Image (cartoon, rainbow, N blue to C red):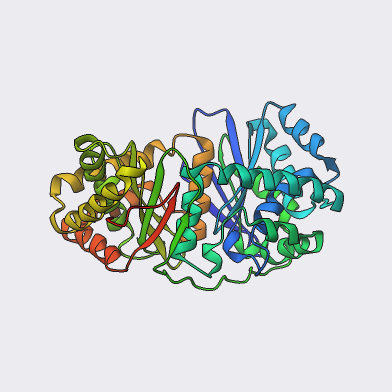
Length: 409
């Protein structure tokens, strides 16, 4: 059966995809507000709210929320990104109402107790400390900050010690009231799900919300910045970034395929030339990340401190060469990987719900996988080369973790 979309009178979107041969369901509430929408001085607020709603909501304690789901064999999770927040439950099909009710409570009726906030603040600070002690994790925050310096999109999702300390209960309540608005919410379910039952739940649990949309975040502009974390680790971690493209940019798929050919797998130029032929790095790859109005194309490399400068210099050269000499065979291989990745990634009920919701948030509709595959098939060699050249012409942001990068790089 195909996925279908409905909208409540107040603007909240409901998406449902019944799947044959499945006995479980994934249901999630997707808000189009994340870390980039946070007020100045409160970086980490969206993530803290995501944590705090699980401390008690809708008359259930933190333990009560966990037990209600796990007594039925299900699981519940949430995550915060720079441009969206998600609350999702995985359950047996008969427990759709339970999962949807709890998710509604998390978003609409959290306790947000001040004493619980003080305890959870320590948990989030520990999470921040763990991230900072993981160089191949924190470097991406450093690169994001360098690429969008001084802008909300450049702030880390986890925040900083001083901004985490500044978060209080009134700030969290304002965030929920301002950002979790019907026009920006998608309730999506996939698996063994009854469409009419989900629509009734949506109306009962969210239909009384006043219409409205969350404030739009300010547009971000790519910056040519640097961030050097001089703490010493066994390896030097390096990431370079270039201006990417927004979700609706005509070059979206062309840049994604260029990135894949340049450094997306073991057959890519970066992997073969930097790792396999020269042995300069254990880990090296490229990626492309999009947001509403902009994006980031980047390369990450982890190498011995003495090799990192050479690995970076070679990586820069490879990117330029790829934009000039990308072959049809490389493009076709990248295309096959993208198509397989899309379809393989949609084989779980949770992934189906995620995909529906994100397509609605980005395009205002459910985009069938076949349409995306057709768009990938339409990318020409000239378009992929041009998308790569366009990104490289934007200038470079640079982040390092683990020591000083050799000047020769």
